[in-house]
Image (cartoon, rainbow, N blue to C red; front, side):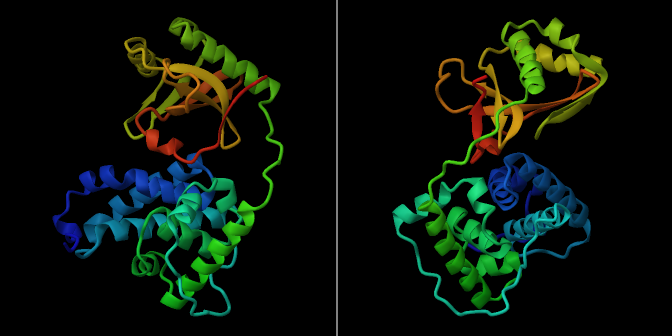
Length: 296
């Protein structure tokens, strides 16, 4: 069945359905699930701003992926990590189908490993081998010719195979003493349900983002957030890191040795908690993240 034109699609329902897939692409393009969510939010703002002026789009999902792709490239340029997008030559290589084992290996590749690929190779491999796009869809999203996509895909797959043979023994930096002390204080009070103690830690102008749900500002509004957590019991907090950043990992209390369900980021100012970013309602963000429990 052909995709419905954009004018006839419930855009909010479409975004809700494909948001995890869009995030998966953005996170692997920029090398972080956290930055990937920032890129995705920026892309969705651009899409909603453009919506009133665009002519009917035959493939709304492809249109959204094209915006996400370009937004990710803008992010990489701003971060000064952008490599050459186009090869000097467009070799017409056949981008053959992978076997099932290799497909699973590429889909499970770490974000850090994807970041070692040049942008064109990274994008083409993620779109086709991780997200299952067709060659034609990849060409449309990247705005590349078919020979250029085939070449990038071939080279990217070859590079990933070579990277997969390398030992992964790079040391992982741990939390600083300051971050460990702050996170453990917050985690200790939260797990003890001592939310009054946490309220005493936050700044008067504290900001909260409950990602994919709402934003709150100030002690009075943010206090309702802690009140909501006091009514449920499906969480247990642990200090740790997500993609190398200090974070609070949230586990199912019945599966503390499993994988975290989601995470929370905290920022501090003058020893007061200034911002809280909670991914409870955006659990897709943790897909592919490198989560480390603090052992200090």
